[in-house]
Image 1 (cartoon, rainbow, N blue to C red):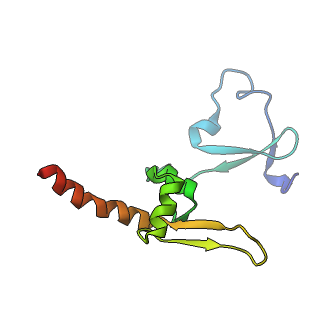
Image 2 (image 1 turned 60 degrees about the vertical axis):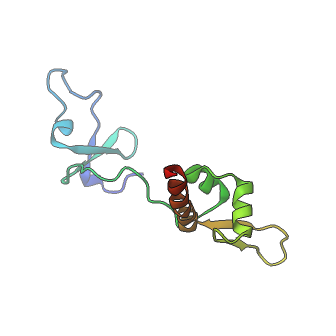
Image 3 (image 1 turned 90 degrees about the vertical axis):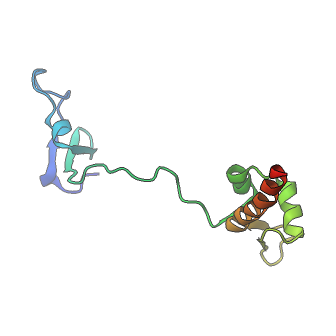
Length: 126
């Protein structure tokens, strides 16, 4: 789909027309987007790539599989901890349905694991 005919140029057969010149798009930081058959649109990127946090942000709520992937706790243990009130969860059930989806508060799971640490450190020191 061609959106703006004035910004389109025909695509060369290969990266350099005669094989002796380097591709200037790669040297100047231009991105090439394909629009239509044999047409390209050049876009210049002005901001260089910056270093950042490669870890994705942690979810506030998660299903049992998310808790298992993050903390390694199995589903049965999650149900027991929830029944004992050690971690917090909510159950979402639509009206008329028997089954629902349980979501666990990820910060409560983290807090529970942090609460185990002092007792185990004290036990290891003895």
